[in-house]
Image 1 (cartoon, chains in turn blue, cyan):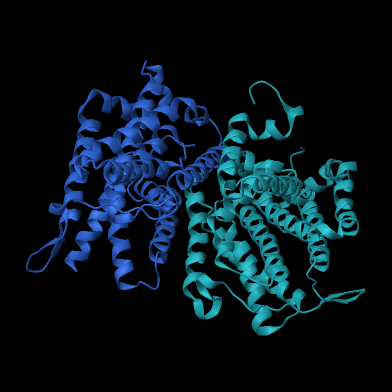
Image 2 (cartoon, chains in turn purple, yellow):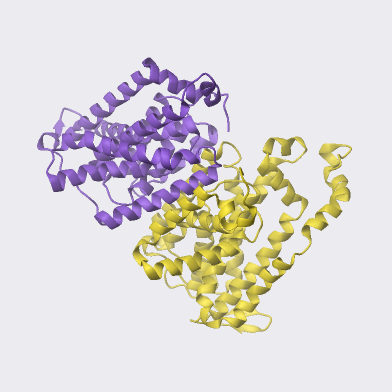
Length: 288
Length: 337
């Protein structure tokens, strides 16, 4: 029971790191980026390839996965994404679905369609068995890393100058740029960090989620749920939503494996029906 | 538009008198419309060898047509339109397997169930932003996918529903068995496509169709001139679902098979692309888009069969970057759209 809860929390933490970049994209630019999972997949593949082919230790690959995905985001944002901000949502959806299809096929072409496995170092394998709870070491590691990341993000958002600029831009983009903030540059920086975090999440999650070329499509809905349910104006909203989703998913799969992902989708529809703006979103004056 | 005396209650009769000439002018038949409709029976007569491909095109066109009402006219961005397509397909296949092999009855059942599902789920999309709608439509399709996957005693699960035999097609000219060459299948599909096109044309040129476009462009304004926005959305979504059900049932009946693939996300994305290639909001976009899409598919598949999805994605990206209106309709090019 507690073990399940623990696994669910680890799962949720991973989802949070994967999806937080998407939440910022949605909140800041009102841009529906269905291709977010592609960045996560890129990070995951970087880790897998470095470990299996170059023999780089697991811990060293994590920052590299972050950097690779961030670089990818930094390349794509000014060249492609920026043109899409003012467009109707339909255009954004089509555009990012196109990117997803390209990413999937490219990964399939370059690396094959089989599932990639990673071997985590020995000190992360196995589990600690306490009296009434079994703690997987890797899960514990994931939780610690993700929690540190969440705290760092919250600190950055709440305490630093960049954070206050970002919040200003999210609250009202026009007024923020009227006050002399370079919203485009803020967004580039956020997009890069968000993509990097997705890459890191993909690398950390390769052991939990599995990694194959259909990853962006398989987990797209999960990232979107985190954002839609958690709202896009805070860090804590997506965090709580991700934890809820992770726990619900793990419990659903354990107690009702026949229902599969059914529980999660039904839950999402129910929540969105009651609170279309998300469970934890605060009332916002800005619409559209 | 003339303002009616008492906006809420007598809006329909007062405006219909004043707006009748305008409506009639808009509903006038254009030459290219007639040519497009006439092309369907001509294709059936002239291209018997291509009937299988034409049948696929007709099914895709019907599916895109149904999305056009939802997206092009009512302005609802849906990522889960395959839900209705799939329900139609499974219903038609199940009816044929367990109840009656008659294709018309199976079709009727498929339409009825799809419309019912559309009606029920339409209440989910009334509230919220584009993102919420996107998520909910996608969620509905995923739930149905899971249901079809898990209820393997009924649907065959991941193996698909096999052993479906469709009986002879009753027509005023006699009964026809479905043949391997797809001649009868395409005739059946072309007839239904034609019927649905005429039906949709009637709808979008009616005051109801105009009110849909009004609320698509600005829901707040539409509401303030007396359009009951929510009821219109429910109606449009239900009709769109019913027609998607026709397309799905056609697929199941002409292929004698239904598999989980009909609920797949790929299908929802593909139909969106088809509609966008053809252009939204003028009724024939689905048909032209389906023709272009299938030809493109054949062309690219012949060249690189395995990686068709990559070029599909690249095409989508380019399409949106250039501007979907401008790419397919070069004569509308103008600075700053």
